[in-house]
Image (cartoon, rainbow, N blue to C red):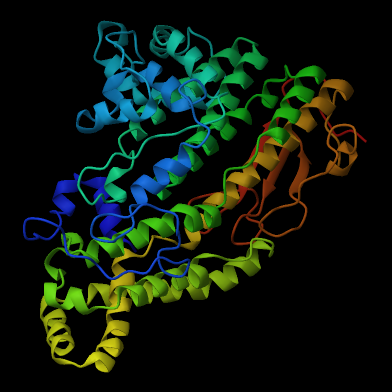
Length: 518
């Protein structure tokens, strides 16, 4: 749900939210809101002049704690992309909050689309770039892509260095007073980071094709670290981008053991780096720490008369008498009951519990879509004419409507994507162990248990079922896969429809391998 926020991502903010309700000149009218864990969720945040919480200032203070220009990966990436990466309207304030000055000039990263429009980019196609990201290659095979990477060599090296920094703070820049949290977020940097990640992955595959596996791995791990840094922004959109970026990097990493060039020292290094890199934060953490605040801020925008609901904007006399503490409490209870869940449960049990929650959310969405201006007028008239006791009852009716409009988009697909990413990492870990085993013994093992304890201390289970991953030797190599969210063995096939296995087939790459080992 949260249709309003999703539209805000896709369209200019001014199209979605017209601005706060007009107030008489002077001090703005106070909105009756009580600070508390059950209402505003945070109690140490600064307040706006109208009494609402300034979540923009609160998050800027929280996210910038311990951050300096030298340890902030976002500052380092600005040296990769240049000032144009920041929207002109917020550029000056962003640099001020970061504590750095914008450069006068520089040689910045050139995206693939921009490169294709130059003389050097003649003959470059999207298909060529995508293939260069998916398999080891040499400069002769995809020459335009090789030229693009050479052009960006310095920028890519800077990006690898930036990924090693411990912080990633992107200032939230208010565009109005009181500020609106969702329109203060950095939605503009997505395309730049996506293009940069593609270049880093393509360079990794080029290096793999040239036999430089450690250099290739360094690029891929840098992409994965950047994905984790991107999650520090705390928005659902940023998380989805990070999840997708991490997944593509892991698919590319799965190609390195297939080269047949992986040796024991490299395998040990790759295994250790995979194990040491922390996973992406869980959706639960994301929803609880920042998405919750986005919803509460949206409710406060409605309370002050902002045009968040378009033609369904509430009348000023009704806004003044709504018990906004009650609305905020309902929103927090919604998060506690319908968003947070027990991650220690096996995935099938998590989804069984979650299915009921999704059904409730979908019901709210349908109810919101059925609300018309005429129906809202009737509710408002009833509210205005009612006494205090009756108004409390009507407030509860309006709570459902407000939650339906401001609730975050959640669904089983998001949790499945999160789980698939974790499974991809487990499979990459086992692949490296298998390549290491084969490098020493000239063949693959009959079972994964043979890898313990030298090559892997523990063999990961299938996160979707808590059963062993499927592994079998075939005439031309092996296949390794998870049965996916449906819990059914689809033979290692994913078709985007009914079959959803997470699979990696590996073929023999040398004459030594024609059968299985011990």
